[in-house]
Structures are given as C-alpha cells and as structure tokens.
Figure 1 (spheres, rainbow, N blue to C red):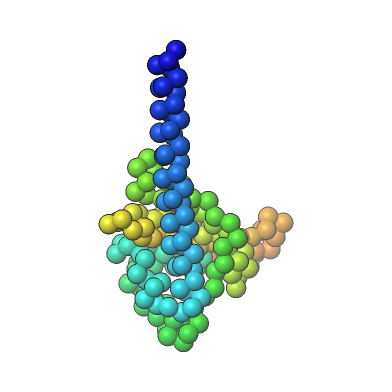
Figure 2: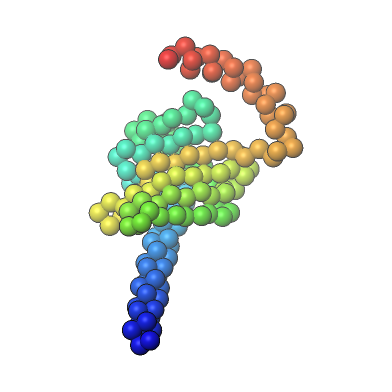
Length: 168
C-alpha cells in the first residue's frame, strides 16, 4: 500500500509539473501573438517581422493571398512606412501544443477593421524562442447572411476559380 501511495504521489507531482510547464509556454505564446498584433497596430515593421520563421506563410482573407515572409513584407512595408498598418485585438484565443512543446497551434477571434475575424496558425520553438511559422486570417460571416455574401462573391470568385483551374 505504501508503494502505491508513493507511485500515486510521484505521478501527481509529474503531471502537475508538466501542466505548469505547459502553462508557462502558453503564456509565452500569448505574449508573442499579442506583441505581434501590437507591432502591427504601432506600425513597427521590425518587431512585426522578427517573430516570423524564415519559411513563414500568411494566408489572407482573399483567395489570392498566399504570402511568403518576403512577399508579405514587400506588401506590408508601405502601410508600416505610413505609420498605419492594421489593428487586431484579441477577443479570445485557444493554444495547443505537441507532446514536447516544440510546436504550438492556435485559433483566435479578433476585433478588426473588418469586424470579427478568425486567426489561426502555427508557432515553432526555435533556439528557445517561439516564432510564427504560419498565420491564416479569415473574415467571419454570420450564418444567416451566408446566402447574401455568396451572391456578392460568386461573380468575382468564379473568375478566380477559372484562373486557378487553368493553371493546373
């Protein structure tokens, strides 16, 4: 019985330590993402781009928006240079980790100039720091308004679909 109690205590202690480590990493990931959004709001180009991996990809709200780090930087630079990029404020965020906490993925709701948007992405821990590897930004559409939005976007996206299909 004494051995069972000791094993249970050790198991509880290990589980508690793992939870504490994960919570510390979660706080770090929140910080990276919150500071990233703040850097955009402050039009701080260097801070915004320094937290991205070299292979970073940004998927925007338009189907044509597939940006590598360098193409996204070229697109964004004029906005940052004018002192006004974009302001995304976190409403809520969920963060998840792989088994050894070297990869994190998340989803978040944001208050933006486009109203409520959803962001999601992946961060990698590199040299002890969290770096954003992928970010996906989507505008949300209330279900009751889906048909109206589909009517608006159909003629535009039919052309895009034809172009995409013809490239294959």
